[in-house]
Image 1 (cartoon, helix red, strand yellow):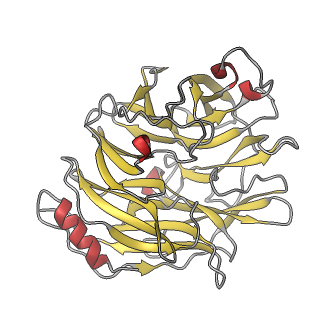
Image 2 (cartoon, one colour):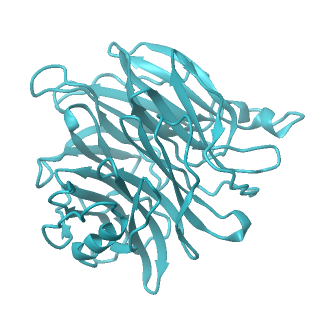
Length: 408
């Protein structure tokens, strides 16, 4: 692992103003879970809380656990649920999001996980539960979709919504019959719904009626509404990144972020990432259009109504599996996975809103080719987490890269 000094160099090149000083080398952070854990998710929400969730497989199903960040370490974890039918996998992972504070020192934590609904391989439902006491107790689980079909429902993104929590997910109800005159008639859809504090459902809506089957989704709250990103799919098998905005009570039709034109007759299992700060939005994604694998990023200054021309963050032997985090109003960081001699590297690169790039930095390694590193900015640091299957200590790795200040 390189030191955070290299991150300093990367951000020096990326910044339009003075470079941010770095307090020291990248530091491994003690993971609060057990060996064999997988699927870490980092989320930041109400009260600026940073939460780390992960799965711990059991003989049947698994346990979802969560811990909050104290500013220098993870607090003791709590169990969200142990589900004997939990769908434990590397790509479609649960998460826990902190919503607005209910009272001083309190907030609502909302968790989701996947539970098998049938004996076919990809029949599973989304289950959602909430806690108002930092995970000491959890509400009864509810399901945001009402179709009842033994099909895939997953790749959930959650966001703060009026009166509760909003969710988007990939919904396979149209695939149940697996018949129809057109491909789109039996394809995956992207849907949304809101779950109120009392568990009641509202606003179930189809955002896009034909999308890529198993690429992760992303959602952020901007100053002008909610923005979601996903991988679309056309009848000609073009699978580019699209966005939809929720404003004035309506979801807008999906709109391409960039015209990559990636034609692929299979799902790449490689979704986009979003980060927002007011009206500023950064989006990062993977594409292999033209048989050239690339990590790309674009910026919106109007809450996702329009985006700048995409910038290639990296290309060549990149795997994808991106994440993105704002550092300030002038720059953000993008992370991805890339093969190297003895396994796979977790790479990082800074970019300004004007498209200026820093140097590529290696912040960690994994023995897994299919892994989705997570990244959030908190307490003057970038926090990153990913899964590794190293024989000596398989499980979740967490790294902290301190940044003292980014102000001119």
